[in-house]
Image (cartoon, rainbow, N blue to C red; front, side):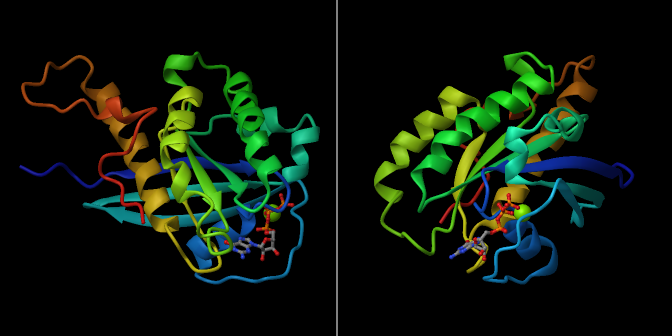
Length: 210
Ligand code: GTP
Ligand code: MG
């Protein structure tokens, strides 16, 4: 028998250095458009995306945090009660990739969770329309990086050309849902339940990547 449809509300953070494309990714994901003009986010912006998964309704409250907040103290407030995060870098600017580790450490430290149950995070290598040859050679390195730093997985994305944004979001939501299901089932031994949590720190088995 099918369960009753459920409603989920998840707070999702989008973080990373200045100008990497956080607002553009959200704009593409929520409003299906793109602008080449750069307008820096001040503080934090919000957007809501509603998904239907099976029969459940999933509301994603996206927190678009300004890159400049890396240098401020507000991230502790913004991160509170987040259920998942995207950390974004710009494939054309290596220093934004170097900053990813700092963003991840900031996230884990301020959400006050131990390494084991860190908030699920997906790494986005954005602006892949610019440098198509840069990353494919480094796929193995990227996977290793994700494992070392506790990312579920990574995606090459382009807000401009709408590459992999829906896929990355589906992957993150799937992991959050899986974690919830695991928690709910914790007391009830299940005969044939796949270990959905195993995906953390390695590839997201059900996710598409181009
Ligand atoms: P802050 O708010 O300052 O932290 O920046 P942000 O990360 O929100 O970056 P934003 O989305 O404002 O994008 C910065 C610039 O990069 C803008 O000019 C965008 O048009 C451009 N941009 C964003 N995503 C892409 C992309 O996928 N490809 C290309 N070519 N340009 C992009
Ligand atoms: Mg922005």
